[in-house]
Length: 323
Image (tube, rainbow, N blue to C red; front, side, top):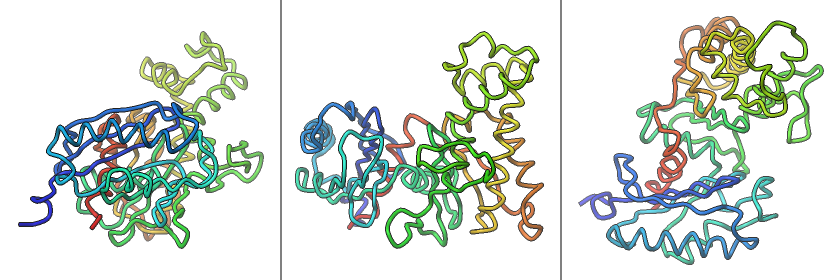
């Protein structure tokens, strides 16, 4: 009997700034049971882990018990795969270094691995999604920020400290670049995240005089979804916002291709759902800017993981690798 037969399930836990979602997952990527709690429900990390484990224990018991679980995978902001710690995460309620993986292992007695959320998404895509069978690809997550997971020769790139692959913080505008949450100017995520799209919308609405449905929304409240809703109704200004965003992203991806020559770049997250409005300018900017030797070699793909499940699936995929 192989170990999957003996232990057919893994647990995935996704720790977001607002919610923590967890689930029991089988080898095909089916989520058999899931639950969630508010991430900020406890000031102390110990109390938070206690609450997650209490709910999770019930789910595990209802699905054959701990003997059926091969491992637990956790995706979290600033999660370090090497030591299982969350380190100085700006958007989480607990400060400093939190030894999260070992806290779960102590309580549940199941091997636990931790990585950052974008790496978890990449591992999920490789295990269950669009990157199945690929040894070289880059996952770009377009959410509140821009995250990335880089796989080379079938292995996740962690670097010597566990934090490699922050492509969202490559500086793509040196002159008059937008201020980023990281304190520097001109980072990719200030332009190509959902937040970046809203910033672009405000800039375009101020700089231009042409009519747009977006003018009926107070500028501070505009979201990337508003821009998409206007674009699909033929709003030229909204379509130009996507054109601008996609062009910047494509220019950056052309550089990333030169770095690791991936078989594919997989786009994931709310912004990727804008379909052709984002994919066409991205593809054109890649084609216009990529080194000749790489032209036409890297596929641009949409994630095949359902948004609501992706984070849990990605985290759970770490669980299969545990001994």
